[in-house]
Length: 291
Length: 291
Image (cartoon, rainbow over all chains, first blue to last red):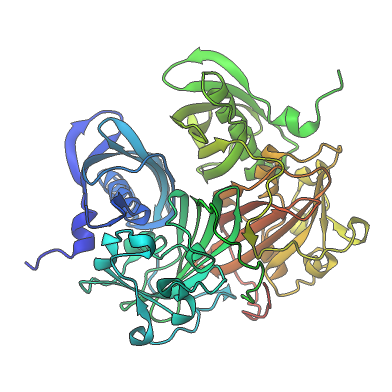
């Protein structure tokens, strides 16, 4: 049997054997899937989704193997190491089911999440859309995100994945932010694991903050992340576009859209994150002409 | 003492006196704040936010009177009448706190929500934004949403609020959808209650589905709603813009942005809703030139 790919290994859940009113799963938060030592929020969300899916699958009912919606509030960053996910099936439906999950570490709550689970038809096509994939240069003409970010922050996770930024939105990597709050590019797992519906929960939080293209600002801790998985991605790298719309009162929203290698929109996400602008100079506003 | 305004009356919560591990509040779901007899999702979210805020205020700690984030999964529509909100404080922070809330009726879960609560500075100004309020005609040149919608569906809630649609996005009211998945216009409470941070949770789900401008489709039941409250609105009517981006597999996403009468972005929301397209003819895609 081939060794499990990294993403599958680090998101693994094991029924703890302990039972009370909720199903409990042991997880091991990996030190490599971190930003400055803190676990990436999308990685944690995917891990919790696996626990939610296991809780649902452990009893009778229609098979709902895919995430459809996911919402997470990040209460406190867990440390790499052992943790536990407690899940509660809220509703079993014919077409979809809902499950609540909480990540706990040493008795303290880290992340509170709710999922809708269902089954995506791999052949689904849009009935209507106006959200086209951005035109991206080929991967080998893009700028690979490195394991060390602006200001020397350690981005260990960037060694696990292959994030390639469109040079037009990678100004921050050379200390020259474009002034437009957008980053876009390609995403693949470094070990060649193909994307699936679960991986989209990570993809939705995989890119550097769009605010890095506004000014020399720090990484942004996510307060809340909502992901809608809209389909099963085709094999091949994903296309990701992340944009911020309002920076105010040390909070920023980010919209993230994800397309598969065939150009189909497969995930949409939004997050609210904390951001210290401090003394950073303010870029001109409203200069982008986005669709 | 003047009589309470409608929105304050219908979202009122009363500590039930029963206590277990969570704080419990009695609520009365109003039959007038409904679409086809089903309570509006934003109205329910605002009611639950009041319970969450009461749970937080009932113990010591910094005062966090305003919603900052709200996520809700709608499990089953409650009926108008008595219901209960059970809340659980997840974390008390210095700047923000998080509270979980569940709406139950007759022992069955209806809505599962999580809130971040904090305090918005009424004088906060954007550090950066590119999201400007849409140019809208004056309210009296807009089309008021009526208490009966397309297909004869009863929209009782439209008698409680004053939704005025920009004629450019009100084609559906005359059976001539524009073909662009956008509705925009003005929102006020019918009895003159001024908007506040709480009311923005309702505002984010107050407009007709943007898909009505694509084709003659039905109302859309919300599966999940996420709202970010970005500020305290100034007095006066709100400006609301709601857009859909992808209709696929009988699901549609809707993005909603809300500005106050001074043109400040005060709320951003996204929802995923169920939509039966049935035999409706498919409009051309991607024809809009939005910013």
